Amino acid sequence: MGSRLFLIDGTGLVYRAFYAMKSDLKTSTGIPTNATYGVARMLTRFIKDWLREGDCVVFTMDKKTTTYRHRLLETYKANRPKTPDRMVEQLPYIKRLVEAMGIRIMEVEGHEADDLIATLTKKGKDVFDEIYIITGDKDMLQLVGDKIKVLRVGHRGLTELEPLDEDGVLKKFGVPPNRIVDFLALIGDKTDNVPGVKGIG
Image 1: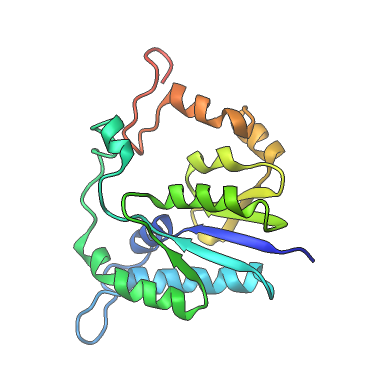
Image 2 (image 1 turned 60 degrees about the horizontal axis):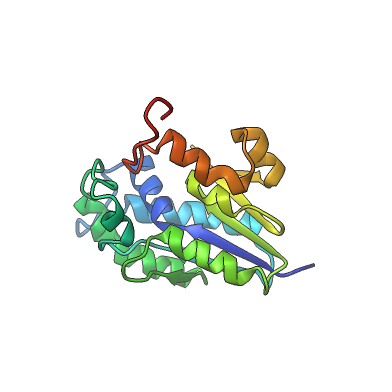
């Protein structure tokens, strides 16, 4: 069996866990644990269902600083509320948990988790036989190609992963992976507060 690389959009996973689990979960000393518990459950299931010996897994995370995207578009992600303090408080514990599960964490100043996934995908193509990108972000579909698939995260987190190869992207969105960027530029992206072309998006 060939070598495999799994790239997880860790920031997206933490947000999903935070809002999916009951907010009143906490330790006896009052530290909130809902996101930590949610991430633990999802990763445990993922490891059981997907991983085999020799697989490499990287958990990528945003660094909360200005990126080049903000310089290109001042309103980029300006519609998003501030990250809840209860989530921020859990991040150190989540990182320790992920590392304890044998998963590497990567975060780089001035870059988003998506940037790291794109870079690792590009560099990993010459090293690994298969690359799987685990995310709910449509932007990442542009990376799908030979040896590279997106495992699209569903409403139930990592228990509901939808594998998308080149044919799957074309069938679902009507355009091939190498046209996803053009497609999203035309229709815009409300999630990131990026406007589309007038009269189209």
